[in-house]
Image (spheres, rainbow, N blue to C red):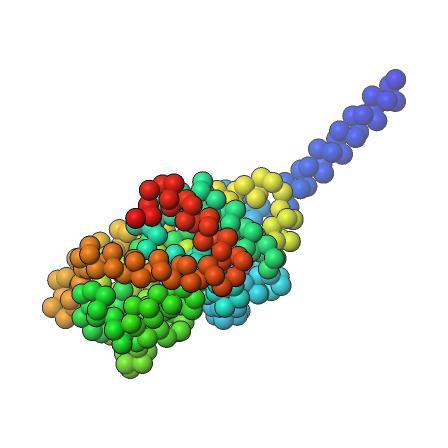
Length: 340
């Protein structure tokens, strides 16, 4: 009996020791951002990596690299899937060339009037599950959605409505957003964010779908395109945090939960910080006689949304996955009374 008790105690001690070793295990990850170093978005993302370290008690360490550090901005999905990177923070639109579904999932133009609407869909309306199913075949785990919020629009030419888009050479990511601008009469051009200023300054493009107003201003874009539109009429991108699926599966359940919850916090942080910066930047721009801030009337925004919704259907016909995204999205919007 005594021997049995001693063996049971020894087994329990070994289990506890093994558990302690697992708790002390460090995980070091390399992520690449879609944003350049020094960009406000990149700074907020870096704050997230620091919080993950604290929340995990030092068990997770994330090195965040700027855009282009390891691979090009539109190659991170392959790099993460292959294990060259452990994860990325990026606009899902950049992978529309692989499957049109990514473009519709990432930026269903006209669907959302606020970040909160998108977050409700992602977390409680089937959006997270939809993204997980899209990315699993590429060996990615969709951890969660963030966004920069409703984007500003940068233009060298005055823009007061849809008619002013005719012939406008506009930088836009490939996929749905390019199709919407083309349907509205513009001429879409595919350029990485880092090249927008030079392209605007040299007249290669007339306008740019870039990012939020304050970030555009801090990067000097309003010097080259001094007719910005605010609030934006065109875009609120899904900026995903995703990881290599095998790496994700190697994490214990508590660290998976920490990663998931931390991305929710990142989403709130990103929207809140950038919104504050936007309001300050808009006030500064309006006080600058060289910058004219344009605000489209409601009827022009509605015209653009109608054009965009017509393109949703076109994208849905391009792949089975795109049809699934369309059905999931429109079913939710109808149920919420948001599909007017």
